[in-house]
Image 1 (cartoon, rainbow, N blue to C red):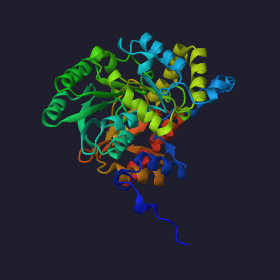
Image 2: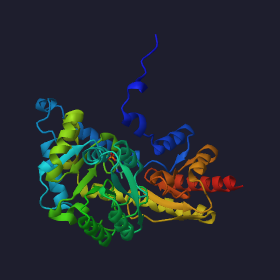
Image 3: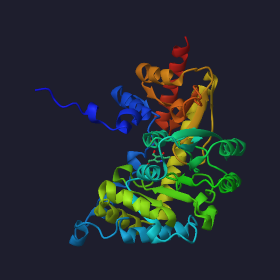
Image 4: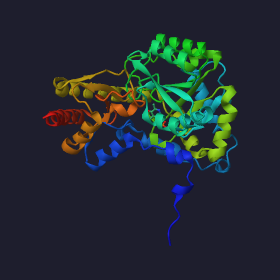
Length: 405
Ligand SMILES: Cc1ncc(COP(=O)(O)O)c(C=O)c1O
């Protein structure tokens, strides 16, 4: 019997707007070839608090009441209370934020998706940084958005370019990763943040602030958040995540949603899955309230800062003679660079995995079509110890030499 072909009954969205993640494909290739990886933007397994998580999740089933449908569509109430207190203590939120403005998410990625569903109509313009986190481009384009890129530099969004676009096009919202941006590693200065907000106010455009790397700051304090700077203007939706400081596999993050959008975000949650697993949220709350969070994060930061410095030195030692220029991020997981003379980094990065067993992510996947920098490259140092940094950089130098010859 001929099986049913779902192709003929698929939605336009599923047929025309779903794309495969180029980062996922590169990571798959790296694994297939047993290569050293400077690719994945995820925490290092040896730094995940596995034992503490196991303890924290013990007993989450003790309260049978939590095994039914939960009483709040937005998620575990005590956890959301804790998040408000935590963010307030750290000066991240303005006065209007209450527990009722916090929605638990299945990671920052779900917040991106929910915000996209609530704010995007097919054909509308959404502004993203150029370059930006690629999975966001996929999510917004699935929703039908036309993503436009605004260039960024070491200090954040290019203000002149931002105003040019805002003047010319009706923009639905701006998506920004202000701290230790993925992929560029850049952090917007306080000045730039203020200038961006002033323009958004002038052109009456809201902002989606994605901040999963917030606490991974190695050299200096992070500037004030957009949501805090906007104050009562309340034009910012903020996305937080425990993926980078606890573990991505727990799938736990949150959104701070202004009053004028919270009803719609709540309906989207109920329509898609009723609610998220309460036990996960209880386990995470146990962990976070038992930990001395400040010293825990301090230890993470010093470990990752060491990895950043080791990869920077190894890249300089092996690759500055091969035309690599790169930045020095103040936090997060990523170093951004350009390999002068490599005209097609996508082709080269496949070559490097297959021939020298070293994986990097070609920078062009992080741009909207037409804005690509074909020589750009992203290195992640999160999972790279000193020995791997050395060996991987040496392999990359060999790959460049043989690729050019
Ligand atoms: C900028 C940015 N946003 C969101 C995410 C997704 O994180 P989460 O695991 O919290 O969904 C990532 C993960 O790499 C990211 O870099």
